[in-house]
Image (cartoon, rainbow, N blue to C red):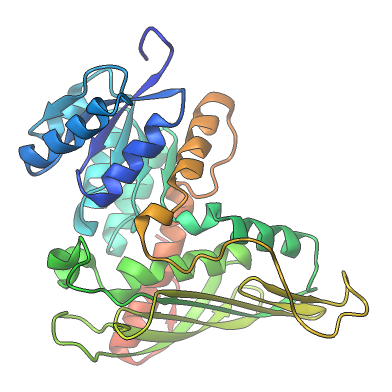
Length: 347
């Protein structure tokens, strides 16, 4: 903590998401950007120079060639992990072991062993964490969560989430996201948003049965997956992910059917709230139909972590909870590969 009482944040990574994290960090008066470390010194220097020259850092931003040097910096109290998927769990564990709080990009890990090791490190560290399942902080999702808590559509018996994002060659992560060893797979790298939101809005997923297909040759893993899911309360649903949709814009579809009505994206049908309703009504708020990181609510996410550190306010998605969403994504991936139903494993 500096003389002004601000917590120092070290960003690991220097790509598009890291820059959005930097903006959110510097928008919070309790935080300062203390350090940057990435695989390329030039990209670290570019990020540091951009935010320092904009007058948004307040203090010099140190640049470290090695991640271990950033972790050894005692002025860095929070690590923002923005590296490729396969490094998330490994580097997050190192941050916890160094006594740092953590801002972790999704996915939390790309296999069950990583998730168990990450959860164990988080629990023994006593540190605070937030994972970027950013839809949880989206205004529409906040509205839907409130309506569900008010039983506006009664008991939910069907839940459907679709993450459709055609990854173009211009996408900033295109070079590595096409390879399973780095990305983890379609459901892990993108579809985990759908498994997470299904859990957040409805509840734990117990068992899945999935199929996959692939219509593009530049990825080395199946790029479209659909799963029938059974929730712990006995209700059912569907979760799908597609990275193949190059011919239409990004879509995130939300459907929940209940005993007293239904929610379809930003549209509500609720006889409980509107007894004489004869059609869906639209909620006047933005929808999450953009894959651009500039539209993600990183500020709200990072503000939530700061409130947790300062006041003990619950975080909407910490490491322990995020691992559960990833376990559902892994079960769907396994079912699609084996052609058999898979129970969601809790590591």
